[in-house]
Image (cartoon, rainbow, N blue to C red; front, side):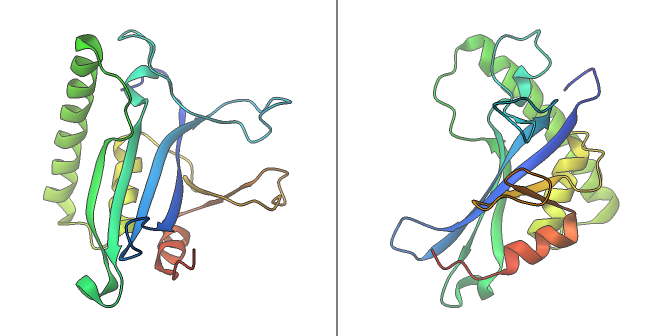
Length: 174
């Protein structure tokens, strides 16, 4: 985990599964915020794998995923919540060790939260726990990209857990 305090956030997307439209998929990528620049006005940055000494390396490709069935499958609720490395394209032994160490830390912290508060009641609750485990401290750690420019001059709308819960409860039309 990071040693210096980073502004950890998650950008999320809900979309219809490309596999026949039977499921909706949820993916939230771990991000960090940096100073906005001319080419990146939002300040949203993806952690990139460099080596085992870079504090951001362990965060590269970490994502929350879930799915929900359509047509009443599983009551239309989100299930199969997972906090994992996702869409990783190459892993050598060094990176595998960093990933295993990070996942071990995440699993221990998540288990402590489950022991204290019980099983997450829904996807938004699970996401809140992931954000807490990763050290997110801002009130609005979940961002959804919008094609239209938002009032803050970026394409992201940031929200709290209740806003995330509302966003993931909506029907996906695409």
